[in-house]
Amino acid sequence: MQNEFSDLVLQMRIKNYYSARSFWEKFKDDLQISYEHYKRIEKGGVPSLKNALSVIAVLDMDEEFALNAWIRSQLTEPRHKAFFQKPRSVEEERYRENKRTITPNDAEALELNPVLYKIIIYLSLFSGRRIITAKELANDFNFTLREAKVYINKLRAMRIIDLRDERLVFLGWISIPDEAKYRSIRRRNFKSFVLEHLQQDYSEEWSHERIVVRRIKKKNLDELKERLCNLYRWYLNNDLEEIDEDGIPYAFFSGGAPIQSFKKSQYFYDLLDIEDDPINEGVKA
Image (cartoon, rainbow, N blue to C red):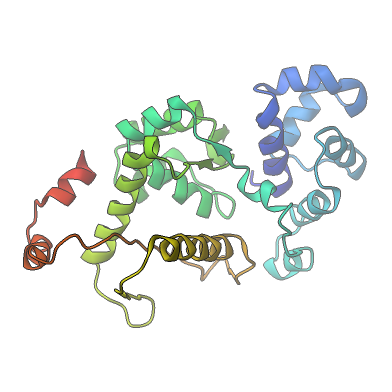
């Protein structure tokens, strides 16, 4: 069963309490419901208003945001749900992203299995809108069912997803800092998206490619990076219209580096025409 409120409860509970039992044991007097009743809420059951308010208070959730989710969970028509969809403030973004910083174990998993990052993106885009199971994941990524289950177990160990019956529930992003020790992970992700873009046909309606080259000083580069970071924050967090039936995944990226020499200009153009070029090998590694 898919329930926006119960997803939110699960996300907030798992941030501080690994098991539902330990959480309930600590707050059972405040919740005033049985453990089995609480588990039904996490698994998709819609609680009464009284019980919903108790859970919201114990988890220290934003009351207005959580109650809107509770109401939407009981509606079926997108038009009706939209009546209770308020714009998210900066503070409320934490409920949508539930982001935490990468751990050494997370980094090792992403180094060994780069495709995990693409699965995380896929689940963040779709798991709140439709039922995703191991079979659907395998189908959409062209995995075997066994491969899909291996990746699911890795993501569960990273506390990025949880299982509710057979459904995969997205718990939140991990943030990969823009630091030297994570550079190989970030570059591999970036190269993967760039190569995927280059291998697709250019769509006049959806695609864009633009580059500008000029001479700058280091202080100009620092300002450029700051402006780009602000643009990415706006693109990720603002209330762009997103209709479940029509919204598509859209990768937006930019990059820059100093031109040390123009001597190899033709080489880099030729490189794109080689099927097994060093860039592709880096992504496959």
